[in-house]
Image (cartoon, rainbow, N blue to C red; front, top):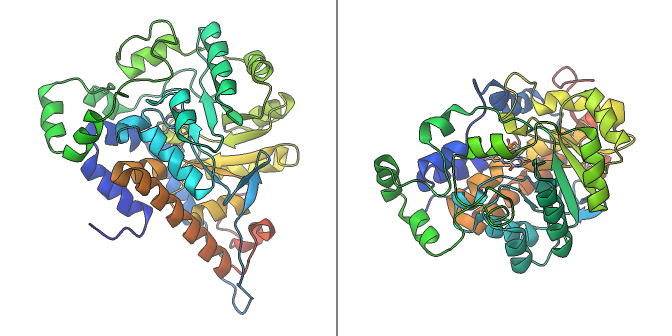
Length: 384
Ligand SMILES: Cc1cc2nc3c(=O)[nH]c(=O)nc-3n(C[C@H](O)[C@H](O)[C@H](O)COP(=O)(O)O)c2cc1C
């Protein structure tokens, strides 16, 4: 067993253990993948100011996200098909998040259902909603979240149409995988994954099958999404969701100052500056580049979070320094899960927390609440 010291170690292990089509599904962006790469590359350009001879004892990274206590300003991002990275993956990730002390967000496109997560965890979790054409099904899904006592709803706004990820088309992505020769050969090299899948009944979209019309079996994900997701989604629909839900509402996928202002007007509690991990509009700026202008425009009126490219606690600290009051992690969680299941997700969170904590100390701070742009070297970070 290799010694795991960083998120890259988990990625390498996940690549070995997860069937090719699901590893590729996670580790890819749309078209040229330029925005996908920029998300993490732009974090690397930001330099930190080291301070010394400052008392670094008794540190804390604790804060609140939409009023909820978190051990660090991080939550698990909604990731479709998480239960294909590892059997019952969403349950494992939710348990790890609960053990660590941050919220877990369940995707609409998850394998385990809302009810599965509620039955296997005690901490309230969050649910991510995609707007589908079938409004009755949407209303029922929101109702299921209330019954499951979800403590926030994350409405994703950047997937009215789906960005093309070449690898998914080439691999013929489906859940579960079709028994083609190529898939069978690949699966033979992943005994741990196959054993896990043989031990669970959860092999398809748990929130949708039997709940949304036309979802009875697993067709191509992209074509199903194209048929079902609502391309007419508007701010009136956001108001409709807010009214149906009545609880904390987080709008995900905001990249533009004008949209951020509309989000404030909608009465949402938080926005996530996000380009969907570089999976939607290729050619969009990195999320960290887009963040400062949005914080400057609306940061005093709404909680601004960000996601995209976070692979270390240093990235979390940089996002915080630039005004993000929370972050989401997608692939860092996926790699932990694919590598080592629940323990791998916990490991990913522990790695990120340790890096965040130590970096904060090196920058001369003991409480994340006191950290601001002054920890960053001028000229190396994006500005409004
Ligand atoms: C494999 C994969 C599936 C995703 N599925 C969803 C989803 O179902 N709903 C959603 O709102 N975002 C989804 N996202 C986007 C993530 O929530 C998040 O914005 C992104 O992963 C952040 O970038 P990072 O992976 O670099 O941390 C997905 C991302 C990945 C990598």
